[in-house]
Amino acid sequence: MNITTEHRTCAKCSKQYKHTFLDIKGQPVSIEGEQPQEMEICEPCWTQSCEEEEEKARMEKYKSRWIEKVPKKYRQTDINHPEYPKKTFHKLAMDWARSSLTPKYDGKTFFGLQGASALCKTRILSQMAKLFISRGYTIQWINSVQFEWCCAHEFDDEHGFDAKNHLRQCLSRDLLVIDDIGALKFTPSVERKLYGILEDRSAKGNTLLWSSNENFDEMAGQSKLTEKQKERLFSRLDGYSNWFSMDEEKN
Ligand SMILES: [Zn+2]
Image 1 (tube, protein in one colour):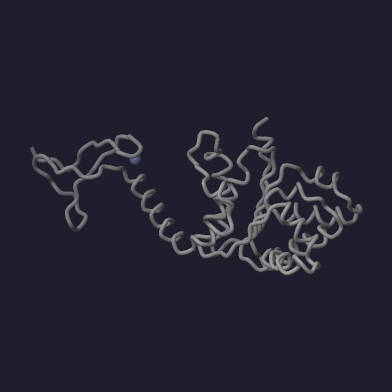
Image 2 (spheres, rainbow, N blue to C red):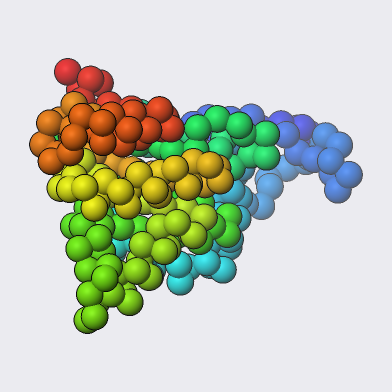
């Protein structure tokens, strides 16, 4: 019996799909008898696996940045883990990251995730960072404790060089990730540094990703800043960022 199509089951997603036999020029062709078994996957799965391969190949080139800068815990993120919010916040974040990589993008260049701990905020940022790194971005990854340390030691003899170097990278790298920004002790020196970084990166259109357990009111509340300092710092962070609260979604 001659056939031009047959129904197959995708080996990857188990969905049924219709396979059309094509000749070498891509024209449907009539086939006789038993066909040799190929790896049978549907077109969406095929496209996806091609994209994954490309992503992997791109990443190979910049792997050292990923390993050097992103903490191991987050590098090992399994986006298929049942508690990882793959379909909601991961998707939202990755869509934002992809769109910000397009030449036409003219939106805000900061992205933030706010919400209680254990909502995978930092893991999501790590996946965004991975995408940016695979596109050749240089990266600085810093958390609130490290940032405070840099501000405190910038001018001392022993650690000054390292502290300055880290802070310089917060300005110069294509991508800056500040993990747990809300946990910063907002002293005047931290405020000055952070404000400078926000202004500089925003003016240059450089990307900044941040996570925070605290919302802006809480950050301001636990700071040791004057009203004016609070206002200029937190209104900048708010205004320059596309940020999302993960708490609201959960409630
Ligand atoms: Zn499939």
